Length: 447
Image 1 (tube, rainbow, N blue to C red):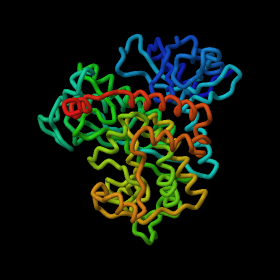
Image 2 (image 1 turned 180 degrees about the horizontal axis):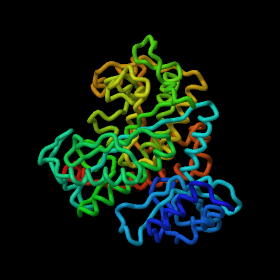
Image 3 (image 1 turned 90 degrees about the horizontal axis):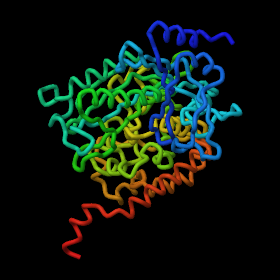
Image 4 (image 1 turned 90 degrees about the vertical axis):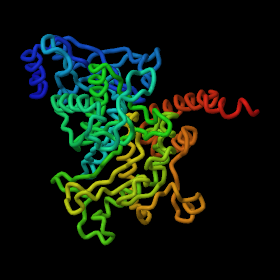
């Protein structure tokens, strides 16, 4: 079979760049990167027939009895890895996972996102995503000793990790991933690199690449980078704020309406999408915040969004309408603030897009926006009076809401839905049976 132009480009680049191994990348259901290496002589055939591998050891894939999986590389994702030597170079491609009989594998989270993206495309929409991922640098992976005491936007000797961030940005750009901003965050040795918006599948690939590059460059400098949602008590957690919008095929931002009477420049489509996010966020919080530790961030203050509300300047609300360039059509978007940096980006984007589309289909209307007040200062009674609900407060609550969600079962499929319920219930049970240092220090000497 004659290779496509993209496949032909890959094959020629492998020869011209002295590539000796091509790593096939894919993720497990929890969003951990998985990979195996393929030699160049096999790539031509892999485009047609895929490469078989044992899926029984990949979390959320399959049992030993039905472990045969086939990975089909996506030639549009081919990149030479810049942190590996130029001689005997190593490249990568993301993969679609199928079963031996040619069916898309139900546990392939990249395909889950593609399915929802295709559904949006059938309605004339293209989802654009621009995430802000935060992370910490520590001396090593044995503790949380920070590299500096810098704060938000610091550019002084306190920002010890500027060189790490610089190398990370340059490496991302060498891999074709444009960066919009990078800066020191508010926590000690906490940093953020914001990626320029792209379509949802490409951006999920970019997020997975970003997280690996951050860790690789940290390792090069002899330190450790962590995307743990809340690594230190009393310090800010690490989120993945997801800026999102819908465009039509002519390149128009369908979220933008300069005549919006509310003054937010949001169209009816945008408001229904927003209403869908607010309605279904409690049901998909298990995906966007999938660990016990995730809820330490959500409930820990520091402008974390626990409340099902929206507004312009209020960073304690779940969804914000950024106002940096309020009259610029391309800049009109919604910022979902609850996801954390440890989420599987494919599933997180799929759930948010599906919730927004459901809001559009059902013609939902959002509640009135909130002002600039700190929603954490309102009592439960005051929140109830204003009709402001909250996200689940812990992993246990998130599991129950997710398990009962028809939308999540439809979006993710029975395979992933069931796996997440079982895996997270086991994690929650183990956590409940653990006695923490906080409990010992608080109770042992008095009880």
